[in-house]
Amino acid sequence: MTRCFVISASLVLGACGGAPAAPEAGAISPAQLAERLGDVAAPLILDVRTGDEYRQGHIPGAVNIPHDELAARLSELPIARSEEVVVHCQRGGRARLAEAVLREGGYSNVRDLSGHWQAWQAAGLPVATGAGPP
Image (cartoon, rainbow, N blue to C red; front, side, top):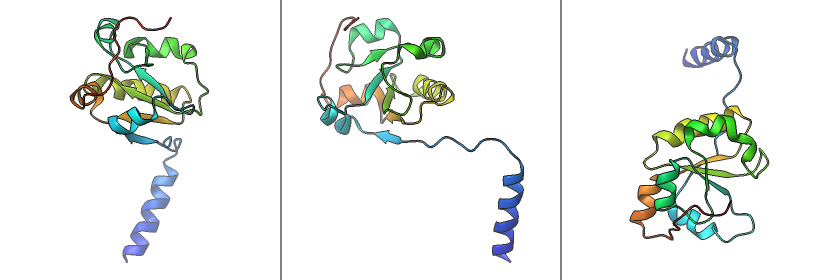
């Protein structure tokens, strides 16, 4: 009986159409990301906070594009759509919005920084200040 229900449910849900959900690469901890900062295969770190927040302190090497500008500025990302990108904001809300924009834009290896900027700072990990590279 249970098996019939599972099969029926699968058929009904499958018949509803729509594209399958994009695979999610999952989260990465601040410590894991910090270990990878100098690697040749380090991910792109996308800081989606405001420019003022970014200038006050950011993860070294992070690219800053505020979440509300990301859709119009996807072409500025210096990676292929299949390459890894780690997104963060202050606490997580803006990053979730940005991650959706990235997935809609075809980025398939999007990761979330666990605890975001607050966790990075709390862990005492390296912080850069200022505008960063052009």
